[in-house]
Picture 1 (tube, rainbow, N blue to C red):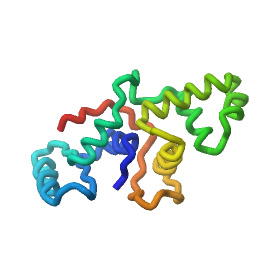
Picture 2 (picture 1 turned 45 degrees about the vertical axis):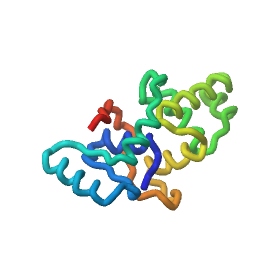
Picture 3 (picture 1 turned 120 degrees about the horizontal axis):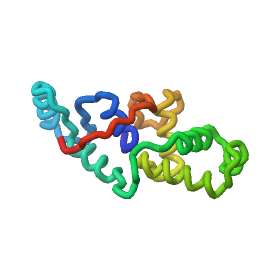
Picture 4 (picture 1 turned 120 degrees about the vertical axis):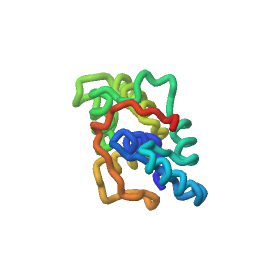
Amino acid sequence: MNAMPAVLHQLIQSGANALLHKSDEIPEISKAIRHLGNNTPYIGPSFRALLMQGVDPQAKSGIPSPRETEVLRLYAAGNSLREISERLSKSVKTVSLQKTAAMKKLGLRNDIELGRYYATVSGDSVQPPEHVGWFLSAEATDAVDFTH
């Protein structure tokens, strides 16, 4: 049910061999099983479309830098950009650019998605109703081929 490209990328990078969305047609289940039986990964049409929309070709890398990750973590923890800039001894503009760049790399479109993303990766119990309870390591960083 999760519709966040950043989480889907991490699911794949962490070793998930098949992903289906609840809105995919029933025959997709048998397709996924056949792919798994042939030891090939499978991504259903709904998630495949979502992943392709969430991939930003302008982003240099789908992985935020360590500083961008720290900025996102502090922001998601409730710190303002000004507080983060003071803590990191950077300008508010620099911190804002780092936050924006990291969110773009992760396919996050707004602060609500950022909050959901961090709730997901941290295993926080406060999650949106559609959350399915999967969470992933932030260290999952390998490139993924979505052509399957």
